[in-house]
Amino acid sequence: MIGDFNEYLKDIIIWDKGVAQPSMQEKVINRRSELILVFENDYPISRQYRYAHFNRGTLSDIWQIKRDYKSPKSHGATFPEKLVETILQNFTQPNDIIYDPFLGTGTTAVVAKKMERQYIGSEINSAYCRVSEERLENALTPLELLLQTEN
Image (tube, rainbow, N blue to C red; front, side, top):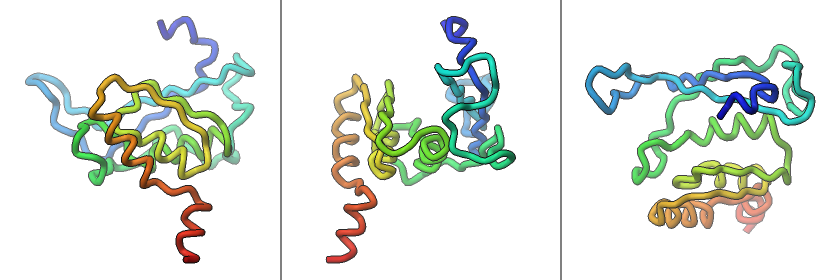
């Protein structure tokens, strides 16, 4: 399946979580890292990004971002907001549409809202949908945050 998109794969980033969580089964290596595949549908063949927002020499392919243990306890595989923020900051711009096909508890949507991106998410677990909706209601955009501090 991924082979169908091989010419659009720009790079692979390693997310180093800082600590390996115990595996879910016996005789399985504890996973301390995850891979982030970065695709770009425009400008294939080159490793150079056309629409990235980082300067030469400022972004490594290994991101050391610790897991966020403040995330909703209702889901065991949430991403830290800092990870999503790093992705959006370097590869998107305000008003871009961010799609998360496995929304879970809504971390991607919450960070997108805070960073003034549009978001779409899909989730089949209704309990996670309720958590996402609640988190989105409580997430403030920079303008909402400014207006709240002025009052």
